[in-house]
Image 1 (cartoon, rainbow, N blue to C red):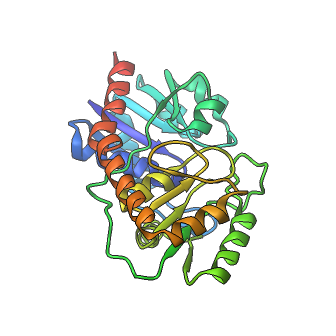
Image 2: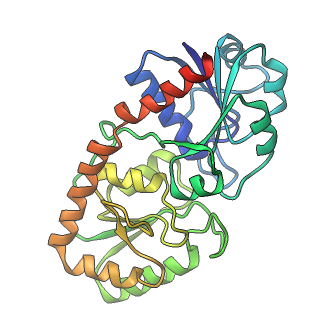
Length: 292
């Protein structure tokens, strides 16, 4: 089966990780086409093919594929190029962005991401898992000084669906730094590889303690064996809200044995429950079903 994955934007490298896992763990003949490989804030991401006017390889990959897997946006060129291809649409963003209704109408089947916020917002669409490979991303030797990392993807205020509590979490971390000898890794506007490196060096990684959702950050932290904090009561994460974040951080810092236990749990969980070689089969099945 020949599949072309198309994403107008990098989508935090979700299509890139999906593409790599399909090539590594399946016999799907897959190409990845991105409209661009960076965001306007400077964050850059790896890519396979870019969809530009002079890139015949990207157009050829789309024309020769049986199935298109299109993420988030429909661009006019896809409608012009489509010649019998079956189309899967997958929606990631909160709030819904761009011409998502046009893409939904264009597709034969629609999915979202298997995360609580997306599954609520895009109900009744089925969620497909965010792919990450713990055989590629794994724990490293950390400095003895406890490092707490936070990687806000936007500065959206509390109350916005995409908020991670930019200002509020910063204030909490500043108070923690005055009380304990720690290092804060504030990860913002960094290239993808540097973003991941900084997360891998953290003892504690804060994801989303605002909305009751969790994101790729939680999966990345699990691969790296970090203590992962979010507002989800789910093994192996440490539950925290904005109101309880400071107290929970101090508890972890003051109890190194507890912190080490959670670090082991997160890594073991992603190996057992979210390994790319297993989760990728959900996509293979979706491609087979739409191609029938």
